[in-house]
Length: 483
Image 1 (cartoon, rainbow, N blue to C red):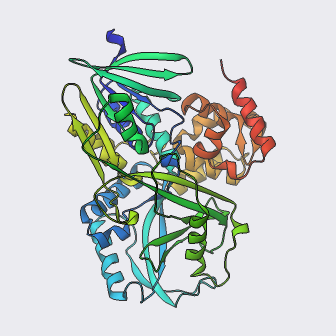
Image 2: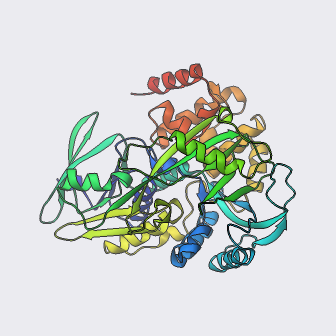
Image 3: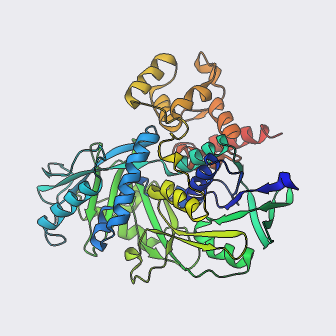
């Protein structure tokens, strides 16, 4: 059964699992990743869409985590410039919450920890936004935004490009430790499968403890804290291309971020939960987020203005902190070497996933740092503005908004998506909002898409624009492509 033996099995197709799969495959290992649903189906598609250092972590003296995050932000801005974009944040100064000097020193330190980060430095500014009523002065600093679910998909795509096998809709059932390898049972719609793996990484996110108990019959030394982070979307309610960071009386912060041109993304909460499946925003969280924004707006946002919402369960390492908001976002790795290795991943954040993968491989005795300089698929771009203008010249028949969205999603892989199309009719069926058959075909072939939901809410965010009839037509098209 040599052909069925993998060097590494990874359980979980979120950001940590796919980043580890990518690093391991690039290092030359024979890798299999299994995901019980779609890639980024849970937590990794329900973030605040930021690639950031975590300014508020400085208050808890997590300097190493902030420095690591800011270093990774710089790496991702270089290796995925189509997907990761600089974003300015503005903070109104509220003296009763944090003194001016404290804020200024914190932002100075943030810039210092991002040494050579190639983004503008923080500065004091006058606030003249007619929508915001909180004072006339504040601060400006820079971080970055990211399409979280596409980042997961591109990590998986690069892993596959390097030789990894990716099985979605495949559930890990159990593993039995042998002398030199694990014998693993997997379950999919095609029935049970048995494979062998010399090492296993449990990167199941909120389900990591459940996988340990049900699949391995053990409890690791570490524990999870499950914390729900919820967000709401409203029609664009602040002007400008910058985001806002709004301080709250409870010491937390809430972001208001321009999102998909037409919306404002507002979040997040920190609500402790007991079950990984409690990923649904509560009425209390909606009320909290509205109050957090309305504390700063001249004209309040009302519940009827909410066009969508989502929630994700953060699987944080239990560091003993009291409040959920105080639990560290750092990661923790448990390594069991009583035979073939089993590595379990606790915690982590989207920004540090690439570095987590490096550390995870090192813990397994595999040292490789090639992903530090390796562009993600489509990321071999020197200047995105120049790339976009070249794309407009090459495909003048495409709508400007459609082309811009696809350039951001696929980067230099856009040529593979569009193929030999010479006119709009060559793109095939139009499902609405600029989603065409050629793009759908590409996503089915290259990005493990099997449902309309995979496309509309993870590979793209066009679910915000399509109606029920268009969704039904898309699903029918996808089903027709199946062998």
